[in-house]
Amino acid sequence: MSSPFSSYDCESDGTWSGPPNGFSYFPKGSFPESHAYQFIPLGQSRTVWIATPPDRECTLSVVDPANTFGGIAIETEAARTVGGLFDVFTLKPMSTTAFALRAAAEATRIFVLSTPGSAERPTFYVDGGGVITIHYSVSVVLRDCSLSLIYSEGALLNLLSEVESIYARQANIRLVRVGPIHKLEFRGMSLGPQIITDGPQGEAIRDHITAAGRGHLKNLVYGWDFETKPKPQNASDLSSGLAGGNVAFIDWGNPAMVTVHEFGHLIGLPDRPKGDVTIMQPTRSMRKFIGFDGFQIEMIRRVGRLLP
Image (cartoon, rainbow, N blue to C red):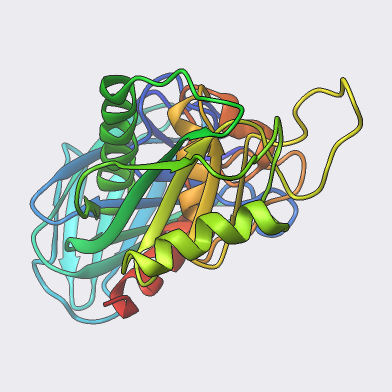
C-alpha cells in the first residue's frame, strides 16, 4: 500500500521538488512502503500530513519508547487521548490531518496508524537530535606543469555553503571548514589530462594534505577529471567524484549534490543500488533536490559523534 504519511515538497516516490527536510520513505523491497521517517533538529519544527481512507475512521497511536516526556511536542486538530506511554488520536475518514512536530530534546516517537478491518500498520518514525559538528578541509588542484584549472573561489564558496546547508537541514550536522581554501600547484610534475587517484598523482595530493597537517580532517579536493585508472582516449568522464579514506576527489563544475554524495562516503555511507531515491545512489546526485533516508541520517550522526 502507499504511505499515508507525507511532507511538504516530497513526492510519493521519495523525490523532492524543494530542499529536503529530513523526511523519507523506507527503501522499497526491504520494508513496507507505507513506512516513513522524519528527523527534526532540536529547536525546529516539521509538519507531516496523515491521510485516511474514504470509508473508515482511523486510530493513530504515538509511542514514546524511551519515556522522554516532552521531547517532541505534537500540535494537531485531531481528537486526542493521553494514556500512559501512548498518545492516541482519532482521524476522520477521507481526511488529511496536519501534525506539527517540534523537537525540544533528544527523543524518538513512533506513530502507528490502525485502520479497522486492515492488518496493515503503517508506521512513522520521528527522531529529534542536537547539533553534531564535523570538521573538513578544502583543496583545489590549480595547476601542474602543463594544465591549469579555470576556477572561481566565489563559486566554490557558494557550493560549500549549499552543501553545509543540506547537512544541517536534513541531519543537524554542522560542517565546519578549517582554514582557507588550499591551492595546490604541482609545477614540477605533470598530473596530465586525467588525475589518477589510485596512482602517483593521487598519492602526491594525499601526501601534500598529510604534510600540511590536514590528514585527520575530512578533505574535499577539487580538480579536473579525477579517475581511479586511465580511461580510453576520447572517452567521456567516467566519474564526477571519488572518495576513499579521508579524501574525496571531485571534478570541478559539478553541482553541490555531487559533493554531498562524496562527503557521505567520507562519513561512512556506501553507494546505494540503481532505483534508490536517495543522494547515495550515484546517478541521483546530479539532481537539484535529493535527500538522505532515515538509515543514512542515523549512520552519519552515529559516525559524526565519534569524530574528533
